[in-house]
Amino acid sequence: MNQEYTSHPVVGIDLGTTNSAIAYIRGGKPELIEAANGESLLPSVVLIDPKGAVIVGQNAKDALVAMPDRSIAAIKRKMGSDEEIVLADQAFSPEEISAFILKELKQRADELYGEGEKEAVITVPAYFTDEQRRATKRAGEMAGFIVERIINEPTAAALAFGLDHLQKDGHFLVYDLGGGTFDVSIVEMFSGVLEVKASSGDHMLGGEDFDWLLVDWFAEKILAEHDIDPRLDIRGKALLKEEAERVKIALSSEESVSVSLPLVTLQENRPVGLAVEVTRSQFVALIEGLIAQTMERTSQVIKDAELSVKDIDEVLLVGGSTRIPLVRDSISAKLGLSPRSDVHPDEAVALGAAVQAGLKSGLLSESGLIATDVAPFSMGIAVLAEKPGGRIKPGGFSPIISKNTTIPVTRTEKFYTSAMGQTAVSIEVYQGEHEWVKHNHRLGEFLLEGIPENWKGQEAIEVTFRYNLNGILEVSARSVSSGEEMSITLQDALIRNNRREFEESVQRLQKLWENAPHNLEEDESLEDISVDDPEDWDLLPDFPADLDDPDEDWDIPEDDEAPTVLHEDGQQLIEQARKTLADLDSEQQIPLVAAIQELEQALKEENVDQLKDVMARVTDLLIDAEY
Ligand code: ADP
Ligand code: MG
Image 1 (spheres, rainbow, N blue to C red):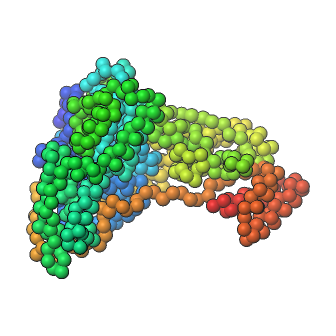
Image 2: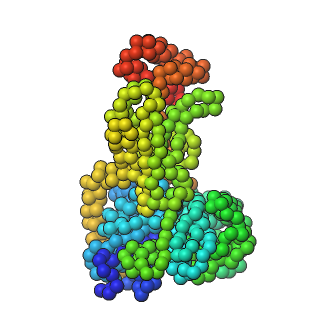
Image 3: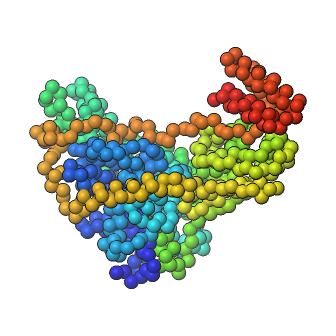
């Protein structure tokens, strides 16, 4: 048993796209927890082996080529989506797959601390959406952790560095280029207080993309020589991908690397291979466009922090892909600074998560270090807004917390009723930077009722956004004159709804988990079959789906649903409807003209119920016309 902790042990976890790691505090310093075999990084790959057992890590990664229908990599890219992942004919959610990775890490902590409850600080990219954060938190809970906090990866990296350099006031630029994601942030440290000033990134850019560029380059060579595209053969494609990563890594330390693959694919039952020399400058030519994009983001984030290049005091490089010399050279040239060499690119994020864990558990409370963070997006609600040409339209975005605000933060804004007799208002919550909500990301909605009937603009509604350190949002709305209040914690609402589903997941995962040996010895059933041996090819399972296709579009679909309307008062609505009429075809004009007439009638008769009813219909027609 470790002597140092008092209540539950708290660990820090880097749940990476490519590799994950877990760390703890020992003797006042963060340290990675190794597996029994001495490995500290865990490839984020999950396999269900032919015996039905779950395998996580290097063995699963080795089986990616041979068993693509049983294994999955880069699940982090799908977090927060409801895509189903089918492994060995069983469907899993991205959270469940991530929970397997976290279970494997938890096992390391269990070996260190013994069984029993453990709290975890888990990192996510700074630009992860609220949904992606909640999915990460649930994955941690499914794996059996109490998830103490979700923190941003750049904050973690800065914490790891800050702990050793407490006297170093200034601005740090954290450039994190991993396997599947790119993150760049400006962190300020002043008297031990760390604050992320600005963050940006690209969740579709990383080392994997460099691998695929090399795969294409290899494929073009084969195509030119043999007139066959090896990428059409899923085994060939997977083999080239493996080779591409090897070549890429070797080119970080060597000027030239040779490829010699006797068998990539078959052409009329004859093997087609690849023998070629790749130089560093050829590789640079392939990737320099992508690296240039990261440099543009870097300039942007410096601007967002209202700084200039000369204000940056230290550069911290994080992520395996920052070992590429072009990355180091580009960033040094841009900033006129050499990157810190005492930041370990693979470990910094997990170590920093452990530092945060230590601050929470009290193990590091004497250190004098404090971390704050920023909101990665603007968050606000849908309102009526003016379109060019003066038309008032529903669906405008009114931010309440703006991007890069230091968190935790609570902000309240006042809004007013927009219709006569309006007794309810629908609060629709969005995150994003566009002035129209349909281009932003919808987080949720609720209805505030019990507003006293009054004239338009006479009733005030206070809307409060609370954004906590886990990056999770709570929204409430209150009618000022009646005191009537409604709120949602987006996270609680979700967990309550899915409680049963969650419990079922936990049990199902546990069953599959218990099937596995988890003794870290090579799995014999995998050793018997080799993808390199064509005689074994019949033994291999079929390759139904391309799990690793970089072109696959997994983005959360844009929310096209029409926003609910805050009602316009009758007269204004009629004006607006008349302006709209001109843009409509006759099929849409007819019902709108009829509704306008009804509305005029209702206004004349001052019948509040009827008025509300017709106004709602006219508004609906206007929305239909818009979308
Ligand atoms: P993630 O944060 O996405 O989990 P990592 O920070 O672990 O990723 O980085 C993994 C990526 O780094 C992979 O694409 C891997 O190929 C790449 N990588 C690791 N070592 C090197 C190296 N020496 N040169 C170039 N790329 C490397
Ligand atoms: Mg990473």
